[in-house]
Length: 283
Length: 355
Image 1 (cartoon, one colour):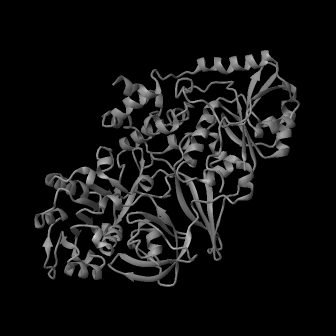
Image 2 (cartoon, chains in turn green, cyan; image 1 turned 45 degrees about the vertical axis):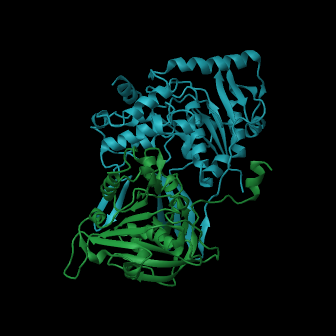
Image 3 (cartoon, chains in turn cyan, green; image 1 turned 60 degrees about the horizontal axis):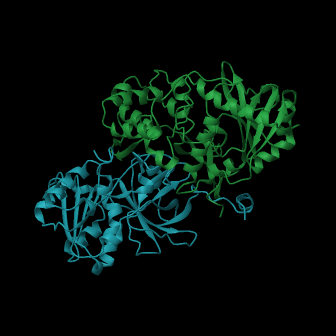
């Protein structure tokens, strides 16, 4: 059939058309972060990989890119965490259980599970960088036998900014994950490590063959990578989850470009080796 | 599913050439107007613009350059993507048959690039549906814009994707028909078969005009791309952009720029509205800025020089492999419209090449 005949009969798919998702659980987890569990209203489950993202919107306010915060091993529902920082995130975080969010996804490329399986894993998460990595953390814990030694570093500025407190409590006790945490500035109740996230490297021995995943604020990457260089982890084994202004999420609008790459399309997860020389990728 | 390979280029029939007498031009345009809305170059004060026409008298095929490129007929300044209301959301893809008349060859090349960029990876029918519904009629350049350099940029990239091409000849026009959509135009006017001499004359006119560009690049695309890319860390970007206002005019007037913002707007009823996209520009200060919360933000291209460099890299280097040449067609719009006159790709590239 010719192109002309096809388009005359078939509706042309619209890459900006979102799907409705019901909020089945909503919980304020810090002063600014809200944790949502969503279920697709059309009955088609959301299928995705850890590290992929989706555009989340409230009509009349707009869309923002958010990473999946739950593992794909859970198929009926999925989680997102939204930090209230502006107009759209303000509208999203004002919603409660039973209300509707609109989503487009999955978008982009996630963590390369095939390259992580069978190896030691270190995840370095800073602040809300724990949200997209939680998808991978829970995936690894769900399929623990497929991975070797599993170490997790989590750093926040102050104890009040810690997320997923129930998860953290489990991980502190778990033998499936070696969990280390730190805060930049302690308060009277904090008994753990104080210092930036790289101070955790002193507490554990990381094998140079470890596969490493990094997700955090833009400033964090170069310091963590310097530590890994010191240990001798090859840059081909380091994966970074980058943040940019992914406005359209489908590789068109241009806002997330780093040189010739679109973070929403080629990323947001990149092998560090592939972008180490890409100017503008890191601070 | 519609074919993502649309629009197919150069797969159609052999072209055919037809002659239209000068005296019959107006009735041809009137014939076009009976089939679809016609967008053509018209005079606006001392400039030209592509605009919907009501009469053949408005058409100015003797224009040198339009303020905005004709891409706006396919990719409008503001375009509704999705409509929303209490009952849910609906797609706003509603193409309208249009005839885009009088497009110079450099703008045809630019539209061809946009076709590829909107088609690749995630097929964007918000663009492609209107593109498919548009019949593009090119026209020969009769007057050369004063900052044009289309003769020396991307010489290996040929204009493709248009349906017909009009060349001004003494006493009339030669219409070269290239696609089935172009063939339908013949029914709108009193065409006769073109003679061999007329065809050859049209070829000569379109070839000779290439000698008349006031600005010239002195190096080929590959050489320019390599040198510009190698100079990413040059101090020249800061120096050349010192007087940049970050106004984004160079982006807005560019026929190959296609960046956009996505915005939601409420209707007056406050329960329904539209999600729409609007042209955006990488020279604007907040283009790559994200909020980090608590009043903090991260701007991934904070400095003017970084934004200025990004545009030139996009035009001269980043997309070359994908497009088969630079994402610049030499129209000279950015050179003409930039207030401090620092956007001219020829001057930037020549400066880098000589550095």
